Length: 113
Image 1 (tube, helix red, strand yellow):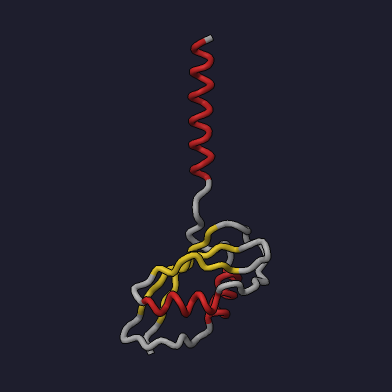
Image 2: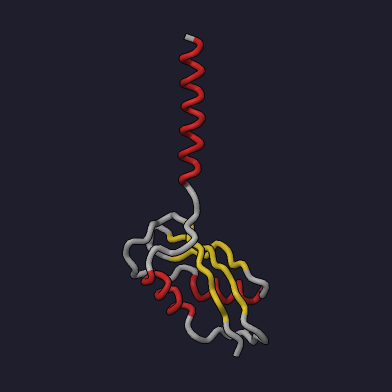
């Protein structure tokens, strides 16, 4: 009887570990349509003077209203955080097939003018 309880406890712990590992972040958006739509929100001109090409990684989530909510912008340029949040936050998506409540990460490349 004691062995059965131990086996059940071990199975319960291992199953909870397996299920928690499945809740990971998406490294890439699931469709090219989503990336294209986000790029259209950002536009071709970002009002920022850069001397060299820069990169950033935008982490965002899609809420129940199918709107983008920017979580963070990982970049060396502080002003870029404000600009990207202003252009993307609460913009309604038309793209189908996105998972609501899931964290997406999208790399950005900003070319110098």
